[in-house]
Image 1 (cartoon, rainbow, N blue to C red):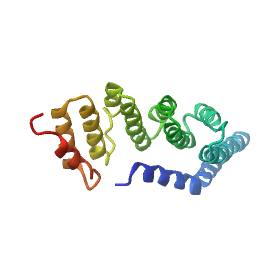
Image 2: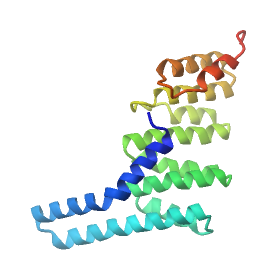
Image 3: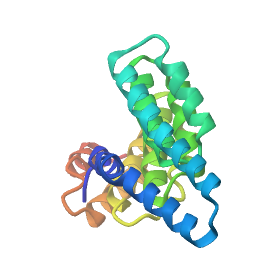
Length: 203
């Protein structure tokens, strides 16, 4: 099972390499079928512009440009149903956490939770829960991961649930969650056993 960053990078690489070709193929296919030449050309131009704008804003975020966050937020809001917006939301959330702006991170990740593919939604759920946990918003963090059913996330979600319950002082619940992470793990919960063993037996 890939890590979250590897999953996102894999999707990002795929779209970087094949996105324009897929878009072009779809546009051409629709054009041949419907004959909407103007519509096709306009749609393809919009998609190509979104791709180029995405790459520019990511570079700005990585460079720490003052206007980068504003541009990223505008792009995400204006393209909320597009995979480029979802990938940019992850980048914005990461930069916002580093900058000590958790509210921005939560908002960016919510866009993916509301509009992304199943895999990206699951990653956004987990990352938002971690941000909320860091802010001691325990109930909201538990709610963020409550409905993750995507294959391959069971161990990760169980371990995170254990972290949240432990932060709440629920040692019994945390112990159960960490054990569930170990039971579901395919070497994807290396810290779960350490966390489990760190809970005092009498608690």
